[in-house]
Length: 155
Image (cartoon, rainbow, N blue to C red):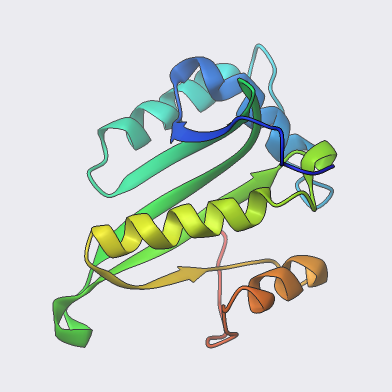
């Protein structure tokens, strides 16, 4: 699939996008927890409301001809080190399996970098599960360096 004749847009996610976004998460072969059901919907709506009121976090929808085909979150973190520069964390990047390898990931990175610079950020950080070898190659090809070792503790 190519993007040459497609109308691609990125916008802040709407509440009505949630079901489609959760379906994108669920399509991910490494995600075993996200599923949109009548029982899970209230938790996703509550999480969306928290993101909406956050000054530092934005959830985006990526659309082709009006259809949601991707999503990501940008988190702006003000820090003291580095002369007080902002840092941007790119989180939760998901592209529909039917639209992968078509350039959408690159569009997300370009949008992120442009928006981060406009907000005065000096860097963009992201994490990717160790098993996502293909994604790691994509990020490296686009100038992202493996610079840190990450740690996580489930609470």
